[in-house]
Image 1 (cartoon, rainbow, N blue to C red):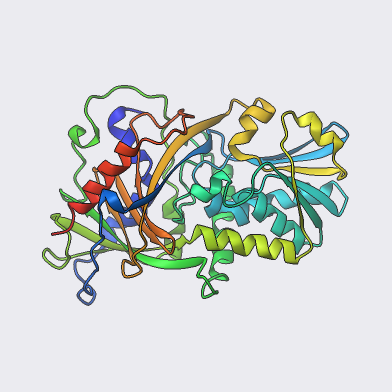
Image 2 (cartoon, one colour):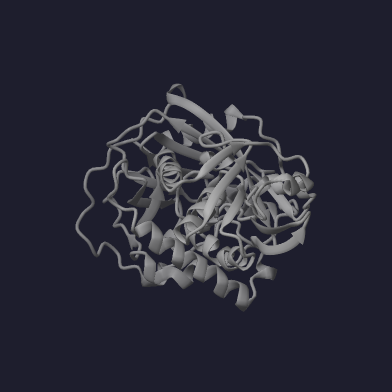
Length: 388
């Protein structure tokens, strides 16, 4: 992938949600938008900055079983930036492998998005589950996700998106989507639908200039990603172009879209509460080698270690993709998302704060989790520039 494509890769999924229906858009075919509250985008309102490593796997998630150390080990990891988004459907694909092992009592390794959801799916299918983990929410890496439903975010490379794989992905996405709809309207609002605005300095049908992406066409090892979201067009409202002057943003072109999002902290708490209420147990334990699986009481072990599988199993197919988000003081009146095309900016309001995400030029293959405050401050300043 060329460098001019790199900085938009992190928001490619989000942009596609707003832009993939450009041919079907109708200019201003809805009531004038209500007055939108401005984001108080200032560096001194940053209350937290987090860095995580997305576990990208060019082949897509690893969902397979093996017999080892006297156990049936079901591997379930490597979801890139789509862990929360695909978790329920992906766990359903892993379920037959778990069932085939026989025992009704299983061990799940990991307490992140995939581990917790897999544990809940197993419980709902009559199994007794014990989670073994080094960390639990909110310390797990999944707690640092942005919270937008993005089922195709770095989920595989284009060369591996075969028809059979794509069909499995769609099955995971639709199954997850249906489950999330059942969580709407609950206390603490773990799942919500939000409007968002896709902004651009030039018409949406025009390609961005190289200068918008940071300069020269240096080669990167980042692969091309498949365009999958068109298969889910029936699950989301149509995006709508806004008439010039009908929106408050200091850009020439704007489009409104509607998309599902998660309030990660309340959603994790819901999963944890449901897991424990159903008789689940959590054991604090760190694994340094998979042979330690052999010491567990359970005969079936489901490995949901995400990026940790790279070190634990020596699985070099897992590639880290660095992601950094800043969290601003919560603004309940700000209830819309923003994507600023060509400016490396994504903003999502949550109950625990306004998230501002920015990509670095060398995030792909980067396992560095040190915070780059300047990167987030620059993103917040770009956000501020959108408001008069």
